Image (cartoon, rainbow, N blue to C red; front, side):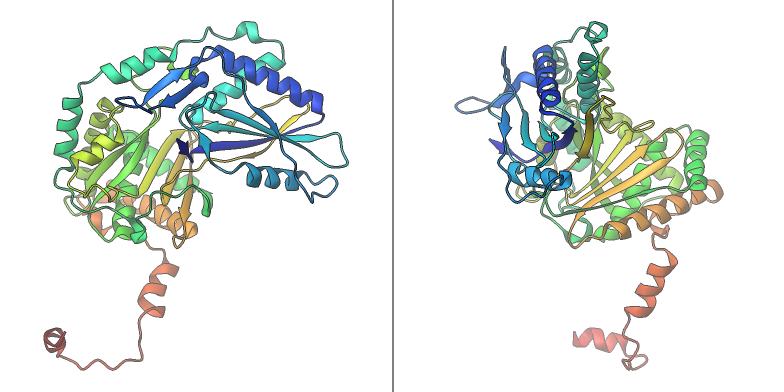
Length: 439
């Protein structure tokens, strides 16, 4: 019942009374939305069910932190993160917890707000904090009437028969027998700790070329960048036919008002591309069709998709994830309220390699989160080179085979070709077949 996909956020308050006011308002937002009062039950049931409580009190715990210096706000944040861990019991509502500690020698205090990812995605955290802010400013009368989450659940559950999902994923994945594992890292059961992160904005010229290529081909920029990611995954997984996860926001087909609902519409589903077949233009066309089809199945459980593949049950189908999201002037839960500041906010997944693309409307920001031994800066460099080369090929030579696109920059190239080869060894000429035979 414990699950480690928790979004922690640390907020600083100028006084305890300000924090108490915030906690009371957060409770009012929980009272408004049934999704925030859900838990997941499965003991003795045929399948797990999401249960809504009529009332669920947010637990507010006081943490006793030791050895914090006077005025050390960061020390309090680190202490709270360490004390709270990343696990949450998902059988008890609400899946929102608040843990509080004072900053020694001051009137200030810090609250760690933890929201379980079962009930929140990126959009939803923004909705949550926008509502908190409206209450704090006395504007709650302006808030739209909350829509019941069950309408969306019903649509997701009843929309498409399971047999149709199964047929689609069997066709897509039936002959995939091995995991696609970048850098040969297979563990997808991490808890988000020990994750290295790096971020960079794509340079303006390349970003403009991506948009121009997409516009010219009548596809989305997301489609182009999915093809780019397939090329990078192929390079680092050592295989041409690759599968990776893509995050679908599930709000596409969710109907009116979906953007105002705090709640989870997010789903990860597999994308497959054989980068060894065909040119870059064909790859873009094929990806466009595949993503459109995937959206039809956006509420299918990932477990179903994996079951339809030929990969052995205990092995993952893929260990790399692409999360493409529109974040015009990314808010990142920006809360502009007097006396409250956001000190820390974090997103984590359990995939060894996650690449998030923030589409800001004119530019793109790539963020890589990965576990050892994967180097996030190396991955950023691969993404950068692959993006530039892909849009160049789409423009100048659309028949260029996708698997021939370079992904290494000059430094990495000379490292592989120069530094890594053992130039000091004598290799007799003309006896390669003999050496093979001896092996």
